[in-house]
Structures are given as structure tokens and as C-alpha cells.
Amino acid sequence: MITLQQALLIAVFYFLILNPWFTMAANQLRNPVCVGIFIGIIMGDPVQGTILGGMIQTMNMAPTTVGNTITMDLQMASFIAIPLAMAANLETEVVMAIAVPFTVIGAFLQPLCRSLNQFGIVLSDKAAEKGNTRMFYFISLFFQPIVQFPIYFGLMFSVLFWGQGAMNSILAAIPE
Image 1 (cartoon, one colour):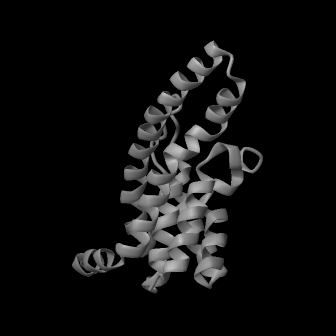
Image 2 (cartoon, rainbow, N blue to C red; image 1 turned 90 degrees about the vertical axis):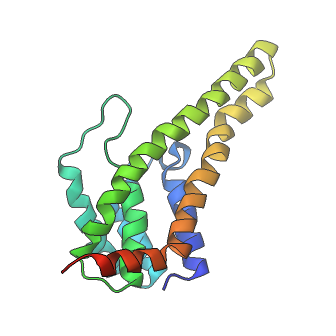
Image 3 (spheres, one colour; image 1 turned 180 degrees about the vertical axis):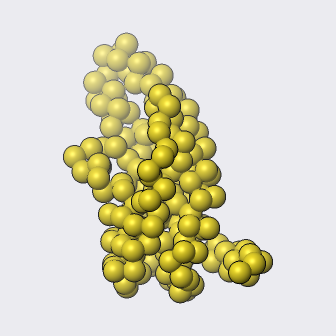
């Protein structure tokens, strides 16, 4: 069972990992095996978190980016599959069955957030035209995280805290 505190911590960590202003210097933190260590610490078993992250990391052997669009979101898969698998005490092989659908869902969320971020460009252009440097810097630094927080944090928290029952039902329906 994922507790409220665990769901909150993991959702905040997910939001931070996806923001470039936080991980510019440490891009490797986005890898599932690295994420797995921290999720494992939050869930109480860093070794199992690392193992599950390593399983998800193997999906990174084939995908490529097309332009700036991702084909699969390994971060979302990691942040959902690892804690749910650890909470349900599932075998490591089952984590892939949980992770794969979320790689696709996450691949649709990033273009959505990028589209919403276009409003920040318009606002920063207007601030620049008026010579309002304070507003320009504020929008440049904080608009993207403000737009992304409800999407990334809200989705992750909802799935982790309220989606456990649905995940157990889906896993029960999958044949051995």
C-alpha cells in the first residue's frame, strides 16, 4: 500500500525530474535505474527499487527522439510502475507489463505541456516589448513549472494514491 506521504514525495520528485531547470546539470537522474534508487528509498527498499528501475532501463535500448518529441516516456513508466510493483509486492517481470502502457501515455503528456508553454513565450515577448525585465525573467524562469505542476504532479499523485485498486484489478485479470 502506498501511503499519502509516499505518493506526495514521489509526485514531487517526478515533477522536479521533468523540469529542465532542476536537472540541467544532472540529466542522468532521469534514467529509470537512478530514479529507482530514490523511489526505493521512499518506499523503504532501495535495492528492489534499483532492480525494478534497471528492468525499465532495458526498454531504453531502442527508442529514439524525433526532433524534440519523445517516442516513449521512461520517467512516467518508472515513477508509476516501480512504486505500484513494490506496494503490491509483485515479481520483477511484472513491472514491464505495468510500465509499457505508461511509456505511451507519458509520450502524449510532454507535447501537451510544450504546447501550453507556448503561452509563456507570448507573454515574455509582450514583457520584452514593454521593457519589463522583471516580468520577462519571471515568465522565462517560472511559467513552465507553474503550467506543468498541476499536470505532472496531479497525475502522478492521483495514479499512485488512488490508482492502486484499479491496478490490482487489472493485474488480477491478466492470465498467468
